[in-house]
Length: 545
Ligand code: NAD
Image 1 (tube, helix red, strand yellow):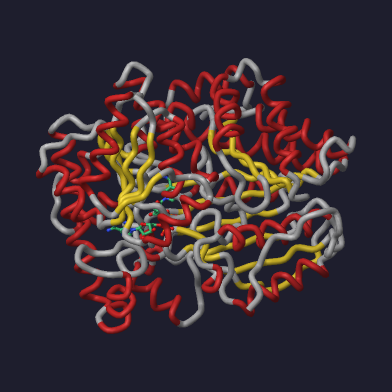
Image 2 (spheres, helix red, strand yellow; image 1 turned 90 degrees about the vertical axis):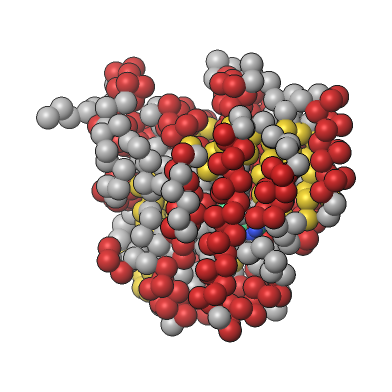
């Protein structure tokens, strides 16, 4: 079958740019994904569409869709086209939402087997994935926050130990280098190591732990940055590093530990063994994966006792270990609560834009605009400088930037004007990660230990999605967890297209203001000072009860 690649240039295959934009975004997630043949984009099992029949039906629907129609998608399968109106979303989706008591991984796998459901990850089925770049600023901001809190603002000479070089974890080596650290990434699959080297996210590879540790020590002594991919299993390598008495400065893990059947590779297994066991004895495979995760987390806990800064990077690794009897697993901090919550309180989070023309100069022009017009925004300008120097484009040129309430609207309206005035070679699609202020309930990641105890309340992402529909967004989606995330989370995604029109000004303004507005209110409602301050500063209309 022919490889899917996102269309570039100015020729439209659809009836307008809004439809064409979403079609290119769909193609782009597959172009950048980890396993196109299976429609898998990242995180072991996160898919762009239910199956190839659904993919082609979506493409055909987008090509014929009128401006006043809405395509409805259920778990990656197009269901129908409805007459709505020109200010309604072009696409709405619900992916992987199971009724409470049925939201277990066993149920999910059964339904998936029957072809009734897929897990969409966050950005896979929402057609928003932009390659490893999508998560890189988040990873960089975490490293920087740790540097500020524990290492006098600088990670030069510091050793970061992590694992997983997949669709998201692949951002770690580059983020580590950008933060000046020496970073060692353990990965079982050589093809993943090679892919990160090819795209310029990883500098060196080895299968020899001695060699890897020697390179790290050398870089530490010279206080220079380095990224190393070590071919090996984290459940074996972490305890071995511990046995040698080496204590990294920072320890985390970004393997697909959330999924025991398709994600985490148990110690002693080859990739072939995993595929065979998935067919022959899935229970044993899952049991072995959980036991290996427990070993790895025990090592992480011991690193913490010996002084490393250890955190869970959003892959449910603590939950898996806890279920295997590692009672202290939750002594490890979650990155959101430990480092990012003060930003989320102001709805500062991962905002993204994609150049639909395929022209990298469009992104560079927006970079320049941000450096000039947002010069007082230190987070954004520092990032744009680093990203334009270090981050290679994958698929359609794109950028991520952590912007907050009001700033996103200001940027998007300016970009829409640039499209209108012909300063960019094509329209730009804006979206943001689901891991954003008002858009996710996940009591073990996003909403762990909320001040008011509202961790498990999923009303917020549902309200966020409905509000974005009411605010004229182009694509709105509601996701829940699948596989090992089943029953653990609900989130919402949104995409808006800046095609240079006056209608796009309206869509962008209402959607972006309201999307971040409800994000700030979510934290204000929970009693966070920073959010209450933001409500006052930005004049967000909060109803007091
Ligand atoms: P992926 O499936 O694309 O990659 C996971 C990688 O881990 C694979 O390359 C796999 O070979 C490797 N791996 C599995 N078991 C291993 C082991 N025992 N030792 C070493 N390597 C092993 O997944 P991804 O997209 O990179 O996501 C990784 C995890 O991060 C997922 O759980 C995902 O849900 C989570 N995630 C977190 C954030 C965040 O914001 N922090 C964002 C996206 C994804």
